Length: 71
Image 1 (cartoon, rainbow, N blue to C red):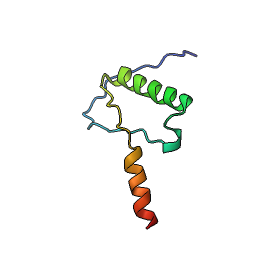
Image 2 (cartoon, one colour):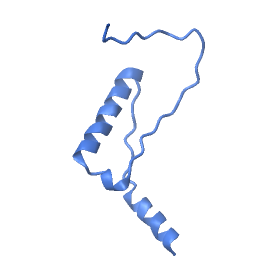
Image 3 (cartoon, one colour):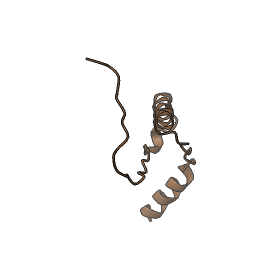
């Protein structure tokens, strides 16, 4: 059994697909989680020849949403 992946062009057009990574705020600074996100981003860039935009720090926005819902 071969460990390689065969990649072929599709015989029809395919619309672009957007894929997002989402994680819980408390895991944002965990080293293992950062490593995984960086690895997935690098693999996506290599596989699809795209630039993966880094997400902004949404900590303040998340805190504002929590405050609004607690009122």
